[in-house]
Amino acid sequence: MTVLQEEQEKPQIETGPTRHAKIMRGIVTPIFGLLAIACVVFGVLNSTVWKPDNEITAAAPVNGLEYVVTDPNVLQLVDGRVNISAKSRDKKSNVCIAIGSARDVAGWIAGSKYMRVSGLSDWTTLSTMKVSAQGTADNSQNQVAFKDSDMWRTIKCNDGAVDMQVKGSNSNNAEDVVALIDFGNRKGDTVTLNWDRRNLPNFAMPLYLAGGLLAILAVLSASVFAMPPHKRRNKRAFAMVEGVGVNEGDENEVSAWVKNAETAASNRARSRSRHGRRRHAEHRTGGRTSSFEETQQPVIVDPVARNLVADQQNTIAESQPTVSESTVFESTAGESSVDDEATSVISQDELAAYFARLAQEEVQTETQEDGQEEDQ
Image (cartoon, rainbow, N blue to C red):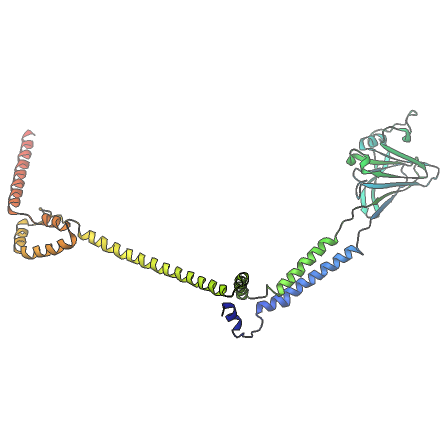
């Protein structure tokens, strides 16, 4: 019987959901679910009801002014293609629309009042203001007519009303391109800019992606995230064991895998215990060696601080036991006992020679001190 089968045959104790599972399934999962539904609903609305319009038309009234000038980049504000329309209250008035550079337009309207179009105030209204151009107006009779001037890149004129389509590719520098509208008199009516957008912004796709991610989080919160950590680990272990048995095609592989794991664990425990005993043995051996080395150090005898005659007599009296003890120590310690015995035992001849040498040194010292006093 494999480990997996034993685990499956164990009696299952029925227990209620934990507090963690209740929170994940009762609070977190509904929140993620509601957010996912809201994202999907807003995505559908942005694709249908709230879908941006393809065509944008913005207009502005013109009162008491002859010229209307657009700022740079206004023509490309919504799309690269724009349709400009101008209408006058005087049906017989010659209305012209010219496309040129900002410098040429400023030179033509120098000293004149004009209406400036700066952008969009909303999706249906142009943002305008009345200003006066710098410079001095040229009122000479030899002045070239507006439609005959070579300052314009493109020009179109008509009586009463005129419209012109401008493409971004028609100009080398789109940022420097402006439109100048000449109503011929101060009876202008309206100016209209119309864009037909080819690429609409897609606001629905990000909402769909967010809704999908929130739905996945809701499912995970109700299943995986709600499980206790120990159950997740047990399932992973069982999955590993099942994978071994299925891949090999034999249930004996499962038991072999378990036995190998148990053998490896026991080997690691044995190696650790052996290593610990070896370390303790090394510590004990080191302590014995250090104490033995301390006992092997030679004994130093200071003849000045000791009574050598009494020591010699005691040594002679205790010669028999000393020899037996030295013999026992010699069998265990070796050559170190010989050094100790030679250092501690002094013969009578050596003692007499030592006293004679000591007396001679004292006489020499006294003679030298007397000679130094006489010299002084």
